[in-house]
Length: 198
Image: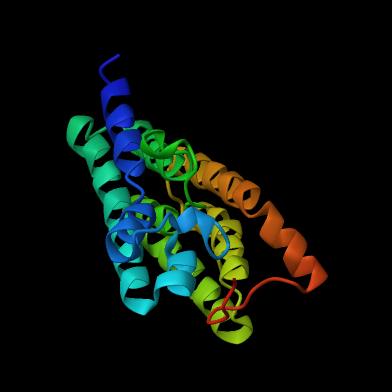
């Protein structure tokens, strides 16, 4: 039962929706009622601009790193606890208890989690994602490629099986949360980075 505590703490940490909080502080708005309706860094960029978006991105990554480290501190030898905390913080970000279970898509949080659990595989998958975003200007496509390639790098670099299963679940979360984006990509209607959406 003691190992439930770090996962619950990670979930509550993930439930801090910084996009929502900063939207309220900067413009007094619910970010989920503007732009794409997503409480994340990309929509913050679209609605509030670069400064708030960078702040949201950094805070979402940092909370994910802290969540995994909660697991590391409380159970240093149990990798599955570290992975569980990583999944819990993403679940909290996507379905935050403090904000009516309407959160973001968990990409920045997934970056923080995977960079802490498996740094080099995350770097290699990140290079592919960044190259994709640079070439196509589709953030959603880069996000999907990041989580799609990550399990292959984790497996190929011999990381523990607990981490492999963890990044597979993260990929499932990402594809599920991006199902509308996938449909728009197929139809050629997806918003590119830098575009405005009323």
